[in-house]
Length: 75
Image (cartoon, rainbow, N blue to C red):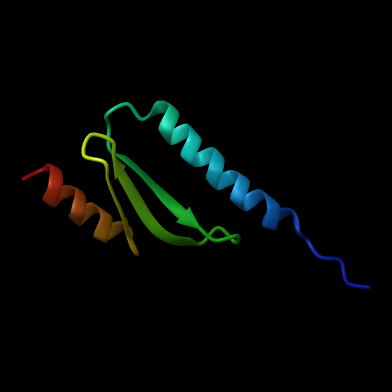
């Protein structure tokens, strides 16, 4: 008999919804940056949302995210 661990399958979507809710709740006008992870905790992408401009982006690495932030906000 095979027992499947389905808790991660149900918790991951809930975790993402909660994460986006918290970001919305506390965001104000600051740039919000977060990691998207798979069910094993590995980082899939880095995402950001600027509530002032309404612009959202996702990158494959932290370095790409840092470069984008520097180009947009520290010119």
